[in-house]
Image (cartoon, rainbow, N blue to C red; front, side):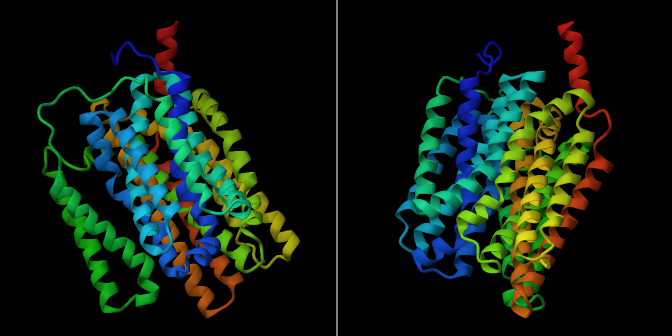
Length: 468
């Protein structure tokens, strides 16, 4: 069934809707902090935890979900993700205080862990060559573009309808996605005996990730040299070393480190982690324009409309550049343009009107760069993954996104609040932005060093020869 079925536009649309549900609950939360805070009567610290929980839980479980999708079925795990999305969003709609908010955010994180790798694996299973690159472009529109759509839409919905309506829309999109992909046949890796899972690896990984996230998020409150912070730092370091050593010896491992022996895959994944860490810019810029410049949630959403338009317009352009010159060039230029856009947002010494214009242009460049980068990077990771491990490889690639975003947001928020407590919000915003520029520079270097010049070209050459 898997060999004869060819992916359809209906399937692509369903997957894009599924991916957008993630961004509705992930990105929109960043824009509605003051509204949620006043409505539920909870502290900024609690809300910050709730925001980061989704990225943390998706990051912790995304590889496991991708590996399970390979074994028991990619469509099945996509459906599990969409059902969890409905449950998580429902928790937020019904929330009256911190309890349901936090439970809902955790469930939404687990939802994203299922949806992201399973849908990429479905794209790889049912599309080939240029058709696959086109399908992944639309997936990227849902993923990278979804972040811009939901940042803008979230601000508008929160201002004019109330923030809970964001999650009602999220439920509608999840149900639509389920209906649109119902005709897609199941896809799984070739049978390799009984289903086995690396529970011990997952346990070590979770402990390590929780310790890292708590260290980053609460380090400044606890004191970076306090006993608790030092213990958390040690747990993170030891956990990472133990996880790496234990996993390398296993036949059935949570993360197959041999994937990283493939340099194009490794370069795409490292740069993806670092470019997603730049998500901290959104928290710093949105918080600063609302706190320091008196913007409403809707106005701050309008500032990022250039990001939305640019990222949506450029994703298909990135796909075409990939088909012409390979993956490396658009990945480098995309990361560079993004970094320049982010740097512009750090010019907080400018007067109101000039700063507003600069931030608008900065967001547009941010989107332009990510749009060019998205499809070449995703295609490089997918096309270099073994066919029996596409879900797992996609899980690792998307884990890089989720953990990069969680760590970037946590570091940026910590730097911003630490500097703001000691000085002005202008200085805090500038320093927070500089941190994100560093992430961008490191991303560019990882592409230059790891991704070969001919990445992405080989598949197209082979395809052209076959069609000829």
